[in-house]
Amino acid sequence: MTLTKEQRVGEIVALRTKLKVNPDIRKELNDAMTAVLSKNGIRYDAELSPELIFALPEEVADALSDVILPGGTNC
Image 1 (spheres, rainbow, N blue to C red):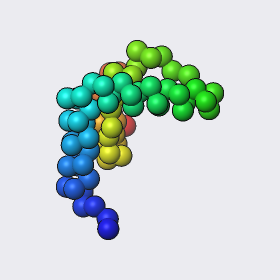
Image 2 (tube, one colour):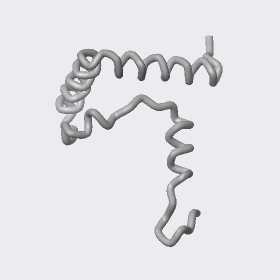
Image 3 (cartoon, helix red, strand yellow):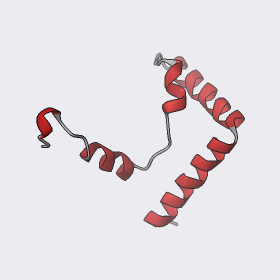
Image 4 (cartoon, one colour):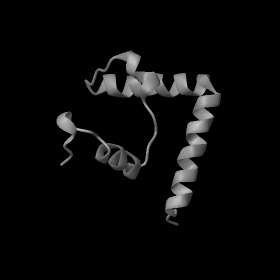
């Protein structure tokens, strides 16, 4: 069964909420992600971990389309 857009957003919101209210889960997830990335030779600054979020592709696309370029000119 394919989720509707509203269902997908609801699932992401629920996941974000669970991670926000339970920092232990967030830490465990970040530790696991760090281990997987490290195993594959990918390193990143641990200070980024609190900044990482789960997002739907269209949320990212919408956010990128709102970028204001220097001089106020958008492409």
